[in-house]
Length: 280
Image (cartoon, rainbow, N blue to C red; front, side, top):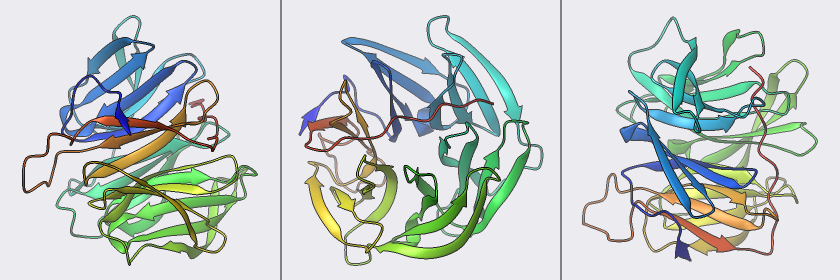
C-alpha cells in the first residue's frame, strides 16, 4: 500500500478517475485535488466540497455549500449551476454520484453526526430536485449494478449497506433491504464503489480497512488493510481500471498519525467500472 497524494488532508473523500486523471476532495477545506500523471493541481471553493463527478462538457461538477458548481480546471473557472432553495440548516451535503443517465444523486448528513435529519436527493436533467429517502444520519456510499436494476446506499451509523430495486427511467427506488451487515467490524461504512463483477468495495471509517463484499448474499470476499484507521472512500482507476485508490482522514483521531489523511493506491486483480458523467 503506497501513498500517491503529495500532501495530507483533514478529510480526503470522493475519489474519481476521469480519463487519465485522479480527482478527490478535502471536504472541510473546500478543496478539489487533481493528479494528472505527475502534475498536481488544487482548486479551492468557498464552502465544503462533499462530492465531485465529471460532466460531459469536460468540467467537474461539485456539491458544495447549498448547491452544485461547475469547475473548469484548465481555466480556473468556477460557477454555480444549481442552488437548493429550502435548505435544512441542520445538515450539509455528503457523498454524491451520477447515475447512468447523468442525474446527480446527493446525500445529506447531520452536522452533529447524531440525528436522522439527512436524506437522499436527486437532481434530474431538468434541474428538478427531489427527496428520495428521508431519515438518514450520515448518507454515504452510493453505487449501481451494471444492469442499472439495483442501487446500493449506506447510512453510516447503521453499519449496513442497503439495496434497492432501481427504475433508471423514472429514477425511482423501491424494495429496500439490507444487503450487507457490517456490525461485527470496527468502524462505520463510508464511501463505496462497485467492480466489474458486481461486488462492492466499502471503506470502513475507524476500521482501517476496505472490504470487498457480495451484495447478493452479504459475504465478505476480501479485505485491504490500511496503515491508518479513518478510511473514507475508494474508487478504481488507471488505464485498466485495476488500481484501487483509497482516501483517508485525520479528523476524529485521538492521537497524531503520520499516515493519516493521505490518498493511497494498490494494484489489484480486479477491475472497476467507468465513472458516470453528469448531464445536467
